[in-house]
Image (tube, rainbow, N blue to C red; front, side):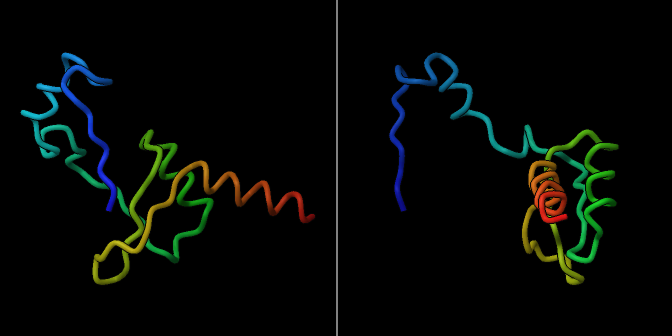
Length: 85
């Protein structure tokens, strides 16, 4: 595993202390909108657009994370489909 060393005077500057004092729970999304692997791309894209989110976790029937899907990936798949036709 590689670590990136960022000093307090580096890229983060004065905000580094704020970041060190905060935890993810304070900024994460509280209500997660997830989809299943069987969700159609059309339905997934509609969900992302409706809720104004860029990505959604994909979970199996047991609720375990199996991946992520985003608007970019869906649009890329659409573009590839159109190019094949």
